[in-house]
Length: 217
Image (cartoon, rainbow, N blue to C red; front, top):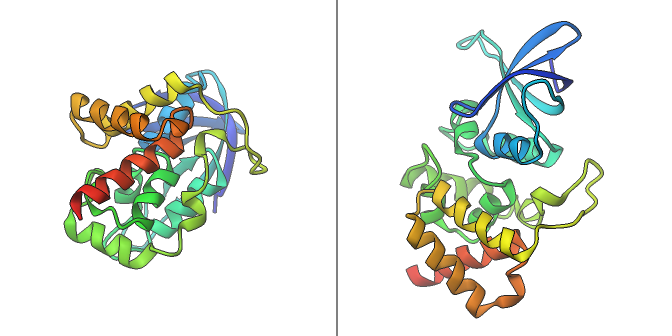
């Protein structure tokens, strides 16, 4: 079984997220959740670049062709393994759903933000309810991570400046299905009410989700 790979990227595509990694003279096809692809792109990793990936390896009697799903950090892989424990969510659906950092999705689970979960690709009302029922209380630690700023050892590093955090938050909401103007309004409203979170993407997104829950109550 393959649990980790390091090598050179031969090809990299966004839709669907996929990379062919050459390691030891062998090309491995690795599926990449949207967030993982975006993280690689943000760091300037492209064809010809060296890469290290945590690998979830999946093969069954019904699906004899191995499926490799790649992640940049063990925390992402761990969350993925928890997500596929939910009834009806297999590796392919879980990989497609990870369009934003795992901490943000975990925050939505812990706050029972069904509306935000339903904006993930392939996740409908019943699936969102099952995710919350199965994982709420189990992903609190993940919700507190700052995905973009953790190292392999789990130590925090510098986060993006305020203007970048605002832009990334808006882009993330658009990725989750919000209209651009709606996403901008939500983020700016949170920054006006809680300016202290303006320079931290994860805190900013948590406040956006909290506001979403409040409007539904």
